[in-house]
Image (tube, rainbow, N blue to C red):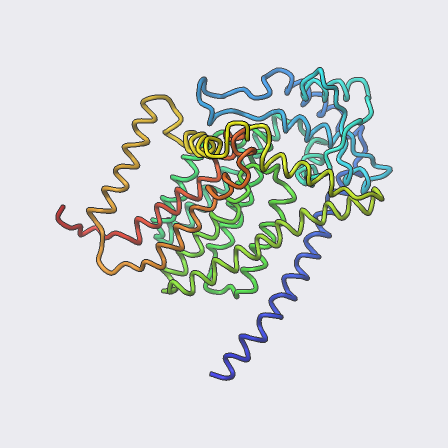
Length: 434
C-alpha cells in the first residue's frame, strides 16, 4: 500500500513534466509550420488565390444551402479573411507576418470583395487580426499552391467523411453500439453535411474525430499521462486552428467516448470516471488557454508592444456586446433558443420542429419504460455534467453565441452523445410495466 502511494505521488510530477515537454514541442512545431507557410512565395499561390477570390465573390457571405434553414448557413466571411491573411504573408519576414496576421480592408466593401481587390491590384495590408493564431493557414497556403478554394472544400469533405466512417466502423466492429449511434446522432443533429462547405467550420470536427479515433484505439493500454498529453494537444490544436466556433466539441466528444469505454470495457467506477474527466478538462484547458496566451506573448515580443489591451477589448465584446441591450435574462434565453433551435430536425421548418419534440418525448418515454433498477447515479451525473458544458459556454460567451448561433450550435453534437449514453446507462430492454 505504501509503495502504491509513493508511486502515485511520484507519477504526478512526472506526468506534469511530460505534459510540459509535449506542450513546448507541439507549440514549436505548430509555430514552425506557420513560419514555413509564410515563407512560400506569393507567386506560388497567385493563380489559385485569384480563382478562390473570384469563387468567394460569386456567392453570398452568409448564404444558406437550404432556404429558411439557419443551420445550413455558410460563413464565407471568415474564409475570406483567412485567405486575405494568407495572401499578405511576407516571405521576407515570415515570423512577423504570422504574428501580425494582417490583411487588406476597405469598410465600404464586403470581405470577399476586399480579398479580390487585394489580389488583383496588389494592395498592401492595413488591418491586423492578431488575437487568433489562424493556424489553418499552415495547411491552406501549401494547398493553394496546387488547388483553389473550391477544391479544398471538397478535400475537407473527403477527410471528414473518412474520419467519421473510420470512427463509426471502429465502434461498430467492436460492438460499441451506444457510442456509435450517439456519435452518429450528434453529428447529424449538428449538420455535419454542411461543415465542409466552410473552412471555419471544419477544423474542430477534424480534430474531434481524429482525437476520438485515437481515444478508441486500445484505451486500456494508455497511461493517464498519455491521455493527458492527448487532450492537451487537442486543446492546443483547437486554439491554433479554430475561429471560436464549436471549440468544446474537441474535448467533449472524445472524452465521452473515453468515459464510456472505461465504464463498459474496463468496469470503471464513478470515482474513476470523474478522475478521468477532471484530468481531460485540465489538460485540454491548459493546452487551449496556454496556446492562445502564447500567441499574445509572441505578438508582444515581436511587435515590441503590449497587445493585451487590444485582446481584452475583443474578449469583452464576446462576453457582453451590444446584445446586452436585450437584458441579461432575455439575452440568455434567446441564446439557448437560437442554438438548440438549429439542431436537426428542430430547425427544419414546422414539420421538423414537431419531429424534434416527438424525438425528445420518446427519449423521456424510453428512459421511463425501460428504467433499470440499481443504475449508477454517479456515472449519470458525470455524463450529464460533460453534456451540459456547451450550454455553460453559451451563457459565458452569450454575445458571441447569440450572434453566431448558426455555427456555435454544433457544439451540441457532444450533448446529443451524452444523452444517448445516459439513456443506455439508465435502461435495459426487459422493460417494466407503465
